[in-house]
Length: 148
Image 1 (cartoon, one colour):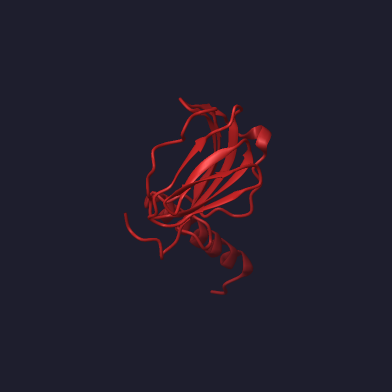
Image 2 (cartoon, rainbow, N blue to C red):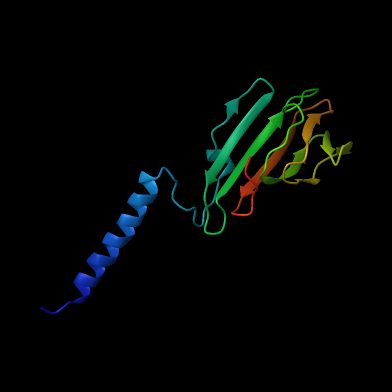
């Protein structure tokens, strides 16, 4: 019996589907490939402190998990009390004036500012302005991320 191109293609598709099925069976989301996240297509969820747009929470080719969201925080409010987590994160201030707890000190920053929250270090953010503050959050976990 001769193995033809069709046989190879069917076997390759079966292997790909098998791997995808294994990832699904293990409860893992498929790896995120190239993607565009359109602001106008994002679902807005109202919260007690403003609103959030959850963008993605999936593994990538090099990260165990990539999570991104955009928070709009009402004036005079905090997103949450100071806390820590093992993953690292970037917070990019888009609008408004905020104070962030970083390295044990509160620092005032505005639009265009970038905050890096290191693994397992206390951090927090509060809107100190008179208008809503908006910031983009990107956080990730790798094999090197400490356990909780």
